[in-house]
Image (cartoon, rainbow, N blue to C red; front, side):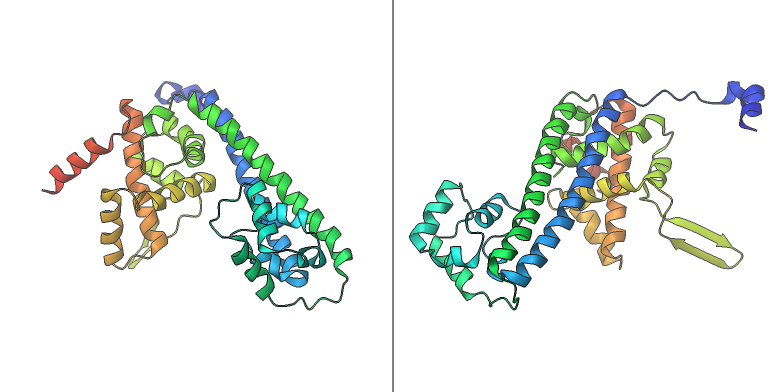
Length: 297
């Protein structure tokens, strides 16, 4: 049927150009990074459960147990017996060598370690050391792989033709911009209207009407990777952009839940991105805010 349509009405169809190669090169490492972040979260949760069962004090020392300083502590003091000989001075020396920047002194951290509840495990600390170190090494490898991908992402993004269009977006970091360009970029290239774009990304709801029945529901059929990238950006933007903050508050005042409100913000930003891409004009916050004030005056 499609082939016959091309034969008879091909002149009325729009020819789609292949996706920008740089976009594909940016999307591949961005998606792999997202997969590795999910893997890191899983491995970190397993490490936390292991420590809580056998060495609960180690989970209370630092802000996150997958940080470099926390993993270095587990390597240097693999058993409670090894940590039992610690003094505030020794711990301060260890922190300096590791470049610790958490702002806590050795005495404070040692107090956290000493005040932690004793482990209920009856397994000897020497036996527990092997699974703890094995799990910690996996977390370290994944963390290093994520850093390597982020370097690649930054290099590819720097040369991407769309980067200049969106670099002034509020609270958009390198990784999040790479996700937006990689996932939303192909839709911008083939989209005809901003409304089509909001539907494909999943920022617009689905409306169903039949007789007296009228429902508005969540759109499940959408590019989930693009929706997640835009959702992250829209939620972050409201903390640094007055227009977005006002839009968010007005929606909340109307009784919208937080996820619904963030999708409303996402629709607004998608219209801006579509206009920037269509006109080839970078986003300028001052120009956007001035036009918004003029339209609402």
